[in-house]
Length: 226
Image (cartoon, rainbow, N blue to C red; front, top):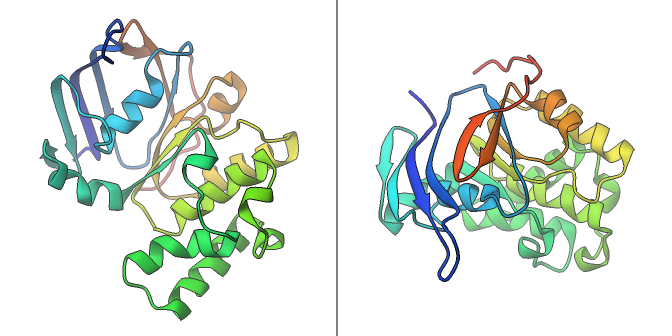
């Protein structure tokens, strides 16, 4: 069973030309699907449609084996598919890094002790313990980007949706991000303009062009065990 199956997705913003005009995509367990395309092609729009933040004008979204149409249908999807936004400031809102990471688990009913344990585990996993008590809005752009990934991993999602995850990262942090992503069990959809990054992390690469998804350059073959 596919984790996501998008079929014939159409979408346009008011007063603008259509963005998606029949996009199809399937995400299977263990895949890391990379998506590229020019600015404004609809890559971020596609990720938002996958978790119900936007609704297609036509076509269907099936996630985790169930068709998803109404808002209530997407509540489970948002628990199981973690979206890391392109702009970290859209995602970080607590005073400190630890509080931002703990927010999701606490919201799902974890005790404070359990949430703090998750914070420690995720920060160690990403080698970010030095940021634990930092004030979030004073972080650099690259630091914020890694913390947003930490907030999503704290929710233990089945799927990761990453929108330009290398923006603002220096070479060392990008290398660390690649190492982390290759070590994660989750299936992923990764939007990225960086062909080198896509080849390193992707098992399959697609190009969004004129509203449709087509095969792009060959990706790496680092298999993930479902």
